[in-house]
Image (tube, rainbow, N blue to C red; front, side):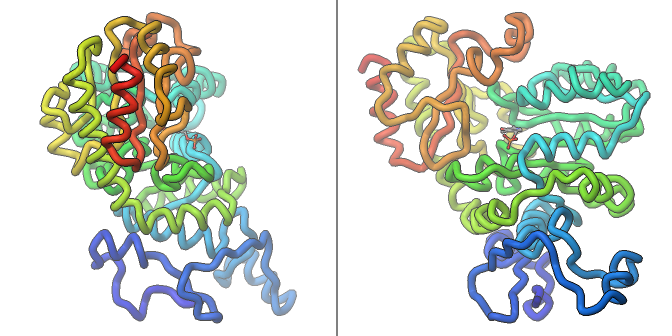
Length: 400
Ligand SMILES: *Cc1c(COP(=O)(O)O)cnc(C)c1O
C-alpha cells in the first residue's frame, strides 16, 4: 500500500486537490481509481506476527470493524477536507452522533444542546442520555444570553447544528466554543447541512465535528454513512477510538467507497446546489401566499451577517412557510410533478418535506412552535436539475 508521501504533504494542497487525491492508498496493482476492499479480516504470516499485532508491537490491518483500506481512504480524505487530524467513519449519521456524544460523557455529567436539532439527535439528548444519569438542557441556539446562562455551570459536552434542520437557524460557533471551553466541555457540531466545503467548525473552535455522509457527501441518495472528526490526539486515542473499536458502529467498505468518490465532486456539487437554491428562494420571495422564505444567502435571512462570517456559501436547503398553513402546504406538494416528496435531503434530485407531519411529528405543537416548525413550513432540498425546471414546477404547485 502506497500513501501520499511521494506527492508532498497533502495538508499543503488546495481543497480541490485534497478532495480528489487526499488519503489515496494505492495497492500493488497500481490502480488509478481507489480500490474497494470487501474483506472483513486479514491474514498473518505467522502466529508470531499475530501475537505481536495484538500486543500492539506492530501496526497493521487486523479486522475491518476498526480498520479497512477503503474506509481508511475515506477517513483520511474527509479529515483533510475538514481540517481534522482524526476521522472515524460510521454506518450512519446517527451512529456518528451517538459515538461523538458517548465518547465525551459519563454518568453524572451534564450536556447542553441547541433546541433546533435533527429529530434523532434531539432524542439522544432528551430520552437516551438521561437514562444513563446524564442531565441535559436545551437552549435557543440563536440567543447568546441562554448559552451564557446554561454554560455558567460545568458541562461535559455541547451539541449544536448550524444551519439547523429545517429552520436554517445559524449559531455563532466561535462564541459557543469559547463558552463551552470555559464550562470545561467539548463542543460537538453536526456539519451535515454545510459540509466541509461551506463551513469548517473546527477552525472556529469546535472540538468534534460529525457528519451524516448519507446526505451531500454521498450526494445521490444511495448509501448511508457518517463520520466523527477531531484533532485532539489524547481524546481520540483514549475515548473515541476505544469506543469505536469495541462498540462496532463501522461503515461498510462499499458505502465508504461510494462516499470517498463522492468527496471528489462535493465542492462542485455544493456550489451548484447553493446557486440553484438561491435562484429558487428568490423566486419564492416574489410569490404571494408565502409568509417567509429562508435561505442563508438571502439578505433577508435574520442572521445573514453571521452566515457571511462563518460560512462560504448558504447550501442547498430552502425553507418556506405557506401563509395558508398545512392545507396550503399539502396542496402545493400535491401539485408538484418534478420535485419528489421525501423526508431525505442532499440528493441530486430535488426533494420536498413537510417537517411538522414527518421528520418532526413526534414533537408537541409547543416544541415545534419554539423551533419555527409550523403547519405551513416546507423544507426543499434543492437538487442539481435546471433551476428553470424547478421554478416552473413550484409555479405549477402554487397554482401558476
Ligand atoms: C440525516 C441527518 C442526521 C442523521 O443521519 P443518518 O445518516 O440519517 O443517520 C443527523 N443530522 C442531520 C443534520 C441530518 O440531516
